[in-house]
Amino acid sequence: MKLKTTSTVPVKPQSFGTWKRLYQYRYLYLLGVPGIVFFLIFKYIPMGGIAIAFQNYSPIRGMMGSDWVGFAHFARLFGEPDFWMIFRNTLVLSMLGIIFLFPAPILLALVLNEVRSKVYKRTVQTIIYLPHFISWVVIVSLTFVFLSTEVGLLNKLLVALGFDKVRFMMEEDYFYPIVLLQGLWKDVGWNTIIYLAAIAGVNPSLYEAAEIDGAGRFSKVWNVTVPSIVPTVIILFILGLGNILEVNFEQLWLMQNPLVLNVSEVFDTYVYKVGIQGGQFSYSTAVGIFKSFVGLALIVGANYWIRKKGYEGIW
Picture 1 (cartoon, rainbow, N blue to C red):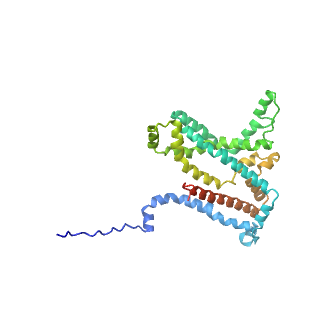
Picture 2 (cartoon, one colour):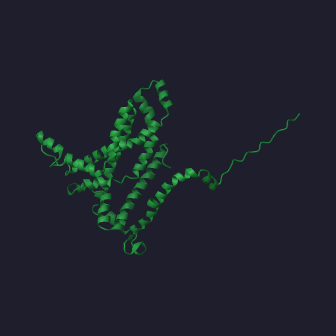
Picture 3 (cartoon, rainbow, N blue to C red):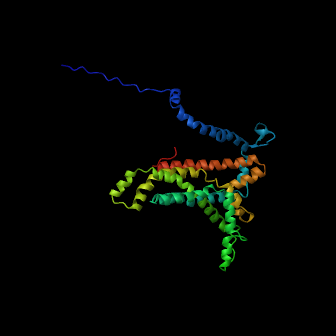
């Protein structure tokens, strides 16, 4: 007897049109509207203004009436006698930030994660977060109070111990260490938030498996915690490379004086002097485009290299 077979009719998956899907999840999409509006108004629409980098822009004649000059402002930038000095200072400060300021919050987050006392841990976190909310004006003022030649507490201590005064704020050799220490004190605690959040998301079963294998605390940190936060570290590192020519303008502007100008002049302070104070908007825009192009090239290159190494990039 031949059994009657029933044909299997493939079930067509339920399809949703774009508008139907938008309506179904309308409340979730509405949450993204403020962010989209913000980026459109403050990020994308102003990008049209980069056209003045190829003009001799005049506020009176406007973009439509200003003369087009092609790449003349870029040629002027690369021909400036101080270009390589500014480029070197910007690059040195950025590289010092990557070498010292980038890994610092990672190490601090790993250490804080090993603290068992919740009260002590929260107290330390609160203390190290607070400097982030202090303005650079206050931080530079405190630096002056501690390090200045005339009223600096450190110089008074050196004199009391029989040493000569040190011109910390006026010597080029001390400029980069002071800037790094200021940045470390202000932001290292705040930047640990992301890494602590990444560590909190590590699967506890990984630690339990490591304990069964006889791993100690250091071994668990090295073999479980660190590999688990590597994707977060990579993404933040790639995004940081995009801002490699972006340094903290406010900090450097306040720390700058004629005696340390050779090591403190960076693109941001240069653009402020030339563009804002000098009224050369087209030239300063060309400098900004150059910085953005370098940052974009570094992001693309780093992302390509990371993906070649088998990690997941930002796209």
